[in-house]
Image: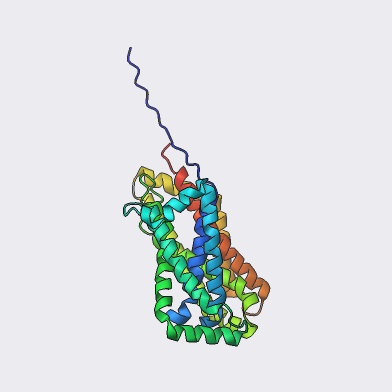
Length: 306
């Protein structure tokens, strides 16, 4: 007698919530620096007041990010191995990520050095940002470029994992950049309440508000585009789309709390004058950014054919 049985084995990942937290922190670091760089790279003076707190926010979140990656890896030596330039492997996404983190961290330290010891008044901060832009605009441009690559990096890293249709969509790196900018605006809404005078903060809010609205609309475009691509790309891709839309983190965390409600608050709420609405909007944007990363990671892992 011949027995012909077929078994399906699914290799479960040992990833914990540390991974999306790590993705969140590097996104906040990159996003806040990109937003602040609008004043120096693109000459938008309304963002000068937020440059100094953004640089330090970027630096703090970048320092915190490896802690959660090490917690997930379980061994600090594994992280040190990845960021060691002598162990660089051109074919390894993790090696590129470690190399990028080092270069980005160096540029952040150089930028932060310009503001250490500077006064904390709005006028002094703006003057420091303006003079720094004139003396070393190239440094800001380089930091901005590294921040863009760093914000896209999680999407690129996930995208090379074979057999994960949700991660292999071409819009994923661009969507990570979009939501990183949203996270940057969100955290600077919160930080700006304590680091800027009311008049200067209102100028920043006026400039950032239409950008945040545009980024939310763009996020909806990426979501619809991704869903349409997955639903027409075979059984594996359909399973990936179903896993994502069944995720509460995606439906309630990203869509409702992170996009729809902030969109309504930005359109109909007076966040310039109402500090409670400003805080709520910034907090919800950050919840949405984290939920996007959590749902992408774990819905992507769960997306297997029955």
